Image (tube, rainbow, N blue to C red; front, side, top):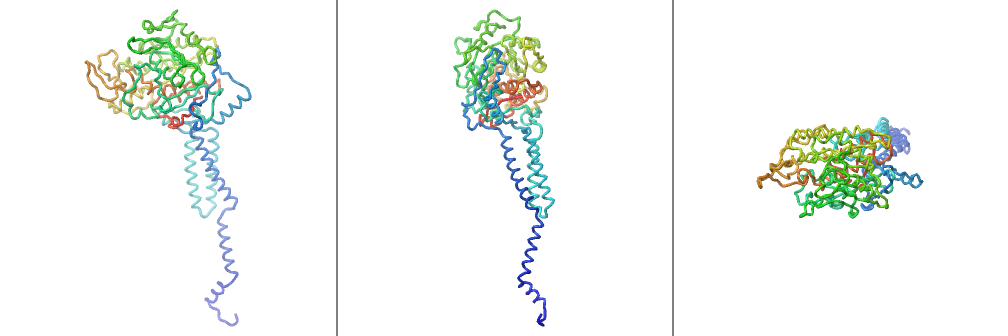
Length: 603
């Protein structure tokens, strides 16, 4: 100390001037900070997991959205090969290596789409959900080890929110909340969208696309002039939306399909032809007559469109009654004097079967027929279970069909009061019961050679449209009820407020009027007509036809797309999904229309 007195100030100066003490102090500060951190491998692993998790969430989002045909022009959508064998319901499988490779490539490019519903992507969702949970737990572990937890807590909150949203979207069964008014549908039975070229596919026999009317025209090119709704005021705002009734449909199929019914059945067969022929209108043959000599109004008895897009066939057979052995005739004349006679002839079936196809062979047999019960020509009490079953069996015998779709009967001017409306509801219940309890036989020679009978819920579709129009024109302030409830349409007593025009079957105001404005002309009540119904019996196919056509393609896909040997329970669930999607007025996916996505159903 050299005898020099020591003071607190001198000690402080000595410490500050020491070359070693500051170094020791800094070292201890660095060591203390390192003690607060996790090991380097933990930090790096955490960072890597977060990056991987973020990347996989992005991939999951891509997987859950519909694939779009961005690089495939509408005109290049695949054409399916037709098998024109005698029994065209048998799918010709190609076991070559190239076919198997093509099928594998297609399956890899397909994603299941659950429009406006929760999304399920099978085992992929389980993997991602498990991964998301693991990442969340890992960050919680990091949180428990650190002293400075603010950033980790933020990370945990974000991961928890993503995890919860992911859990809701991907790991629960599909419920068509927005599409079908809480009608629960199994998540394995939905519409499929694909970005791949399914040309020549051996397991997709019918597909369809939705379009803007600017790209694909409205389907009335074959409609009778007096059944067109051109020049009428627009649809009500909700119905006029592009995703509700303002889109068009195109069909691609190698199936041979026959429509049967009266002039109303003809309307929708014509709409289907327009959707499936595209620009090739010259491929349509028709047998008809001009029933008013001073007007160009042609009524068609038989039509055949072949080949349609995809190589299949679409035909129509006019029936003003139900086929039976009792009303079979030796000859049936398609002219003004005889066309409305209740009956049919085997020669008509032969005409439909012997028409040449694109491969210079006869049609040979039909895969399916679409049945419209001719209510109006038949009174409600003439529409019996026995009569419907006999027509189905005769269609199998003379056309070779294996699948039948029956449309439920809608409101029309032949239903004049609530009692008849309730009776018609009972007829529709009978149709559903026939379809869902159809006996299936393994014997191909059995009269029950029909393997599948499906129901198209046309009454549900049209009743929703009419109810919405009634709200629009002020006939009721009651909102559309729960349409999944059995008999919901029976509550619509305003359906029977009809124009007082002195006719035997006056139309419903809710069905035909565009507004509440009405007037008297020639002692008859009149209103401006809308774009829903032509006359209270026939329909405006530009408005209703595209959904009708899409539903037919969807229902047939439940049977013919995918592997053979399907369980009937799966087919029924697919049937329900198709009706919930297209036989309602709930919006379809906007992207389907915007992109012209190729769609098909499969059970």
